Every structure is written in C-alpha cells, then in structure tokens.
Length: 144
Picture 1 (cartoon, rainbow, N blue to C red):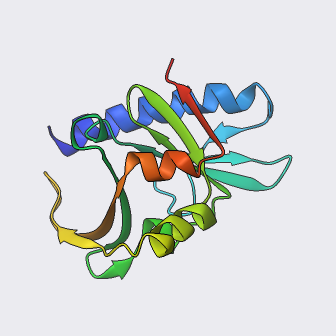
Picture 2 (picture 1 turned 90 degrees about the vertical axis):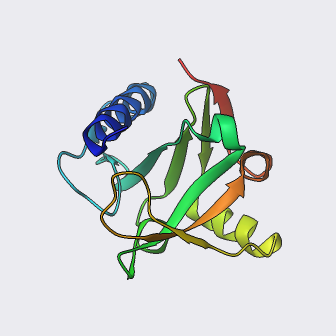
C-alpha cells in the first residue's frame, strides 16, 4: 500500500462517517486539507470528529492509536475532537478521547514505536485490543 492509496481509503471512510453525522447535524462538513484537530466539523455545536480508518485491525485485533509522530505530539495527544470514530472496514466504533485515555490507563498499556509503511518518520502509538475500545465505546455498529 502506498501513502496515496491509504489517504484515498481514509478519505472514503471520512465521507462515509460524514454521511452518518449529517443525518443528525446537516451542517457538518469534512475539513479539507490537513487539520490535526479533527476531520469533520459540526458548526451548530462547534465540535469536531476525528476519523481513523484501520482495516488492519480486522487481522491483528488491535487498533492503532497514535500519540507521537516524528518526535512530536500528534493524534490523541493533540486532538480537539469530541468524538473519535474508528472505521475498521466491517465496524464503526464511536468513542471519545477521554474514554481512550481511560482504556489506556485502566489496562496499563504502553506505546510501541514503529515506522508505518510509506512513513518517512517513526511514530509512537498504542496498539489497543479492539475489544477493549468496543467495551467502553459510545456506539458500535456494522459499517455500511
């Protein structure tokens, strides 16, 4: 997989989540370009949603929750989103940053350091068992 392919798949997942969000918040829109705070913004409630596409979790059983990239805080450590949505290809898991932090703390998890395929820099991320996130999630549903 190339970065370009991954980006395209991630954007398709964001559009799928946006369609679901628009059923309740018609003013929601996908933020174009790079925005480290969130991927979808809802003006009527002034809140954002982070969408993570992680189809590898279907094979590994783990969801990757990044906290650092190129030795700089990222993702979970910099998000301003009020919801995080994990799209695993088969499921859509809705949670919050606070719930993710709680899962990490309650399970005494430690981050791994690795370089993803196509990434020029290493990242630090938690590899969290999907079932741990689902157990504490706001919602889990089948993907469209």
